[in-house]
Image 1 (spheres, rainbow, N blue to C red):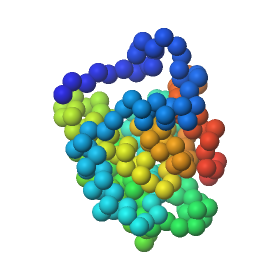
Image 2: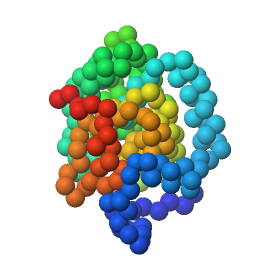
Image 3: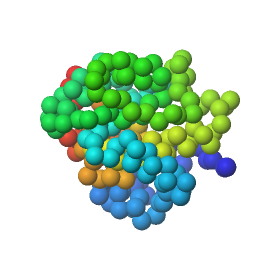
Image 4: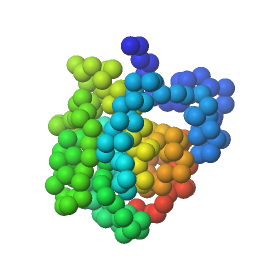
Length: 210
């Protein structure tokens, strides 16, 4: 497989600054029109959803715990738990939490802190135990790392509610499912605020509990 890396949107060579112009509605429309899901990836997502989500109210959690601190403030583990508890009170029901994270220590923390509420996770190829970013580790299979990212992104879009730290991955989950209620736990730093994060922050289900 061939992969192309970029950091800033202007590196894509767009003729206009679409980050400043796009709405969530238009971004979702363009995503649905021009991007598709690989058949094998779609099959994996559907099978996982049927096995773990069917008939359940699922709160999705996306937690970036490694390199994202260069773009947004670090989110304490306890803040995530407090916002899960607050969300459950707001929506009235939660049967499970689906967790996507690059941080094995946070995964262990959440499993141990949710009591009787099940925490569902994929068996991802790799999670970090040392705060080193998985996607920047040149010793790992880039195909498997990217596959994990895409599948988790699609599964987060299948949840009934999403609580997330700053990340383009779960930002796109909102474009896939524009009706998905979202709470973002940290605001990107000035100069790091791009679409769709800036629009998601205007449309949050509630202000995060500190």
